[in-house]
Amino acid sequence: MNNQDTNTESPITAMATGPFSRRRLLAGAGVIGAALVAAACGSDAKTSTSTPAAASSSTPAAGTTGATTATTTAGTTAMTTVETTAAPADGAATDGKIATLAAGLEVLAVGTYKAALDAATAGKLGAVPPAVATFVTTAMGHHQMHLDAWNKVLKAAGAPEVTAPNAKLKPVVDEAFGKVTDVVGAAKLALLLEQIAAATYQSAIPVISNKDAVKLAGSIQIIDFQHAAVLNFVLGTYPVPDTFGKLDQAVAA
Image (cartoon, rainbow, N blue to C red; front, side, top):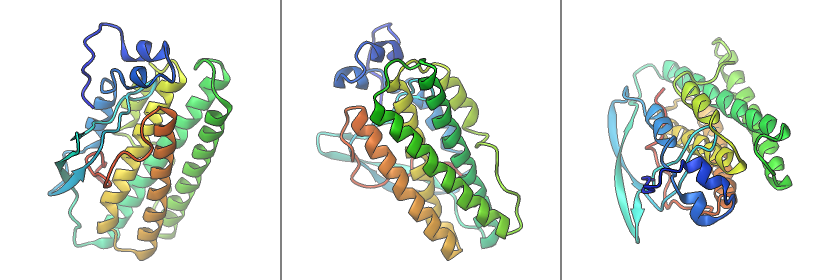
């Protein structure tokens, strides 16, 4: 979403004055998130496909990363050109790269949710509704199980397990999270990470050769969408804003 707020007040400060005000939540949504989206969309992709981008979905970083871009206006759906990675001849090598990428994203998600939980416990995010704290704990557990599943796949293939977060996104997330001052900021960062993960899985599924890995990726993607729906609701936006899944935030393997 493009940030049209010309006020000199920072988006995070603005949001803090009205944590669950719809207009305040949506103000300044594209500042930090743009950097994370840019980091997510790798330039090493090779083939282009067009995918429909539907109703807007904002995700400014309130402490970890900012906002997601919206591409639909008044019932008109824009077509976004998306770069995806073409499947090389060696399917096993591709599957390994995707499993490693997915595991790195899961490590990053677990770490970000844990940081948000720790900050909330320390009183650094202000008042945190019990339902939000429960969601953070639950989502963090989901991502840990997703990580365990991908590491099981890697181990079975004789590849090293992944314990470090995705190197491309980690520095951007850390910088953004350092600016999070409230629940709204943390929720917006979490939403963007869920959207990036969902887009990455959607992009990867068509090029994965192992049937079990395809099933795993598909079963995780839907959970990321569910997490995103809850976060959209918490932020006062429509829980399911998109008509179709989008690939513009996918991370290249």
